[in-house]
Length: 414
Image (cartoon, rainbow, N blue to C red):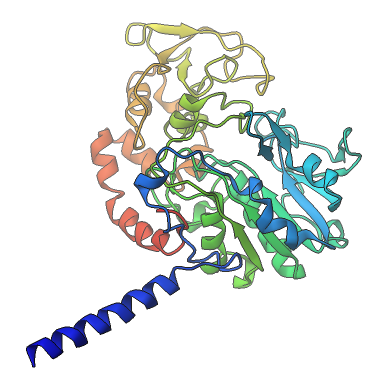
């Protein structure tokens, strides 16, 4: 009898394992739960990441015979074995894909414009394709700009911070596609800050183009995973959803480091700047310069109002690429050089706290942009009240726990 029960239990276990395995076999269209579980963390640790754009075998059949729009910038490339690359638009044109228009986010198609700079529509000199700006007054593609398009391909390198506006562009593109029944294909890329989740959750009254959804400052998702969250959480207008296909990467997990081969924007020149960006971007909502107008953007900070007796490092911001008129242009700023610190694995507010405590003019320290960046008015008040980095971070715990549970439903990668 006992022997028979063992056989029965083993048989049931065998069928359960088969069912679990079958549930994890993903088809290209089933991006919602298609984690690349066939590759363990150990198996992919030493393998090069294959970005979605390189997986042409998945998405080229979806473009055959279709009129195509591309949302792209300078990071939208297909990599070659010799480490060189070809722009996605150039590659698809050479493959006779019928591209009708290219849509460009903040900083433009070639990624040269300043943050917040108005970008005009134009034409790509290499391909002759029309370039439509999705920034300024046209953040969401208009119906007439999409009327000749069957499918839209979105391929932009993100950096994983709520206030980095490429995910806001993603929202509006998805919304426009949903309204017009246009399919959208996301070619996924790594999140260089995908190894942690941190920061205050955005509150609805602080929604803006630098924060559109109730997520923390650092969300820990790839742009493909994030698109799935936008769709399924009903964040598009009237809770509509779009026909979405995420082309996943191969050999990627969230703990795997990734140095971006192409600057995602003019003021994020290297991996260190990208790592510090979620923490130092809060200075954009203050009278402190965060390195714009130097060669160490988002790796230094300083202001003429900071105490020279407290801050020994100094620099003078001058116009350069991505900062035609930097904050405190031509003025000597005192602050800190963080270009050689160890990489961060969480938000670090100690820098902005120290700057506030040692400014010569606390009343002029914050500007109206700060609460939009923070997604709440609480953070500014906590800093003004003298709370420590640890005390402020402790106040985020409950919101982050809820978000992590929600995030888990949309992860494609371990």
